[in-house]
Amino acid sequence: MSSLNPQWLLLVSAVLFALGVVGVLTRRGAITILMSIEIMLNAANLAFISFARVHDQPDGQIFAFFVMTLAAAEAAVGLAIVIALFRLRESTEVDELNLMRW
Amino acid sequence: MEPVAFVVLTALAVVSGVVVITHRNQVIAALSLAANLVAIAGFYLLLQAQFLALLQVIVYAGAIMVLVLFVLMLLNLPDEARRRGGGRMQSGLALVLALAFVGLLALALSRGTAGSSFPASDRFGTVESVGQALFTRFFYAFEAISLLLVVAMIGAVLLAKRRL
Image (cartoon, each protein chain N blue to C red):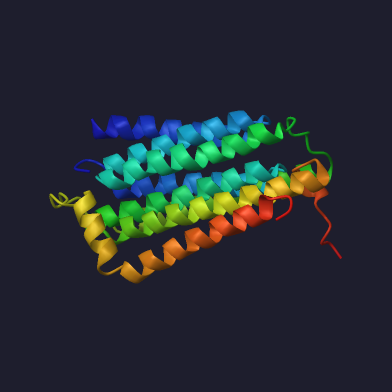
């Protein structure tokens, strides 16, 4: 990182996070929404690791490690829910999932 | 070398990210997300987090994306239909808010103090240094996250199984 300013990496992280937010807000496919959440988690990881490098401490990397594990758990449970929903409704479009709307 | 790598990785990450959130075919979106994850692994290498870069490629781009692709191909979903009426307004609003969010963060970053650029210590980012922190200071968190994985695994089986 001799010539690389960490602020640029944080900016990339912010842009990726915003992309994930747009994905969650605009898409209708449940799996695409899950993938957008993965983008946001990765953007946070990138910020964590940038700060780990800035402070020369492994703590940020440990956090990124935990976030990765969490993402694996989230993907497994999320996809299981999507499969169960597909069985029930033959669709994964979130607009059609209004069973719990009062 | 580093600025060139940074520009290439940024372009790859942003373009593949845009494809993920815009493409109507979800399989292509998933493959694009895999490219995005590999680009982020490249950033980790630039930041000298070698162990995390390896984990990112093996666990994220490998295991998690295979799971997502497997489910996508199992369900064989049609392309997403275009939004009508209120959905369009929601999309426009989301875009405006996201741009405002990036602008705000960029403003905050431009006002912040520049990060240090001192060279990292030799052991920084190796399996040794990460493992040492993981099994000493973060030991209980590590055990808790292993419990979380077991719970998630049982939950996924319970949710997806037709009848037990």
